[in-house]
Length: 112
Figure 1 (cartoon, rainbow, N blue to C red):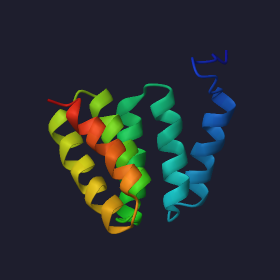
Figure 2 (tube, rainbow, N blue to C red):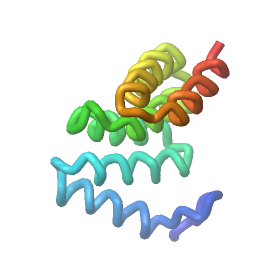
Figure 3 (tube, helix red, strand yellow):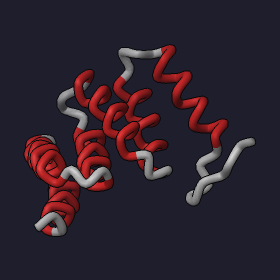
């Protein structure tokens, strides 16, 4: 029985992302997409795993680091979230994305 989750992420779509990550294990984007799907479903442990894979494949993937930070927050892992978001902020600034850095600052300020 397929359940639809809040946010409308269907099981079929999640399976599609799982298959993509399995078929393209060296693709940071495949793991990022799967991690975001888990994040939308509030499956934080699975999201952390997939997003860590994306970051391992591409250490400069700022968006993946931000989502990994969100997954850590969801999983109640504030120390890891703070560390990952700090790295994401440095990358955002280094890559010329001050808007993203500000967004990350907001997330960090919520982690007091």
